[in-house]
Image 1: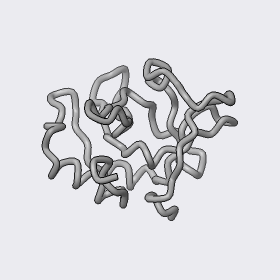
Image 2 (image 1 turned 180 degrees about the vertical axis):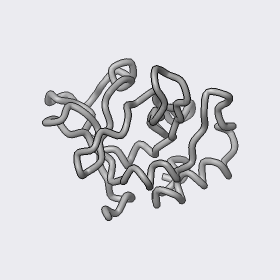
Image 3 (image 1 turned 45 degrees about the vertical axis):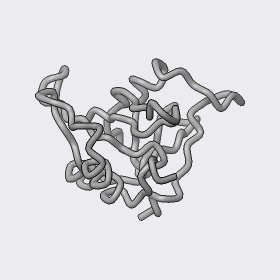
Image 4 (image 1 turned 90 degrees about the vertical axis):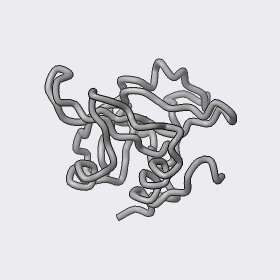
Length: 130
């Protein structure tokens, strides 16, 4: 298993290192074995620093029903220009067991304990401690 704390992100297919948030949403997510896991539903930005904190990945469900949303620390994603999507070092089983929420309600993003659980699960340092 890849050390998630050293994962890097290059979210672009050109030489430009920037991408609009609207272009990130809908981008496919794969695991290192090449399995399609889902897609980026949204990104969460830290209002104070402007850093991307999480990519919210939609996983499971059909036509929007029963979908689960997984906040994945941005540092875990790696953009693969050949696939045109993000790659994460996760199996489907590992993702299914990850912290998630559904359409019934988002987590309290101000709850640092929730954020710490997410980062602990992925083995990354919380973005607010960087």
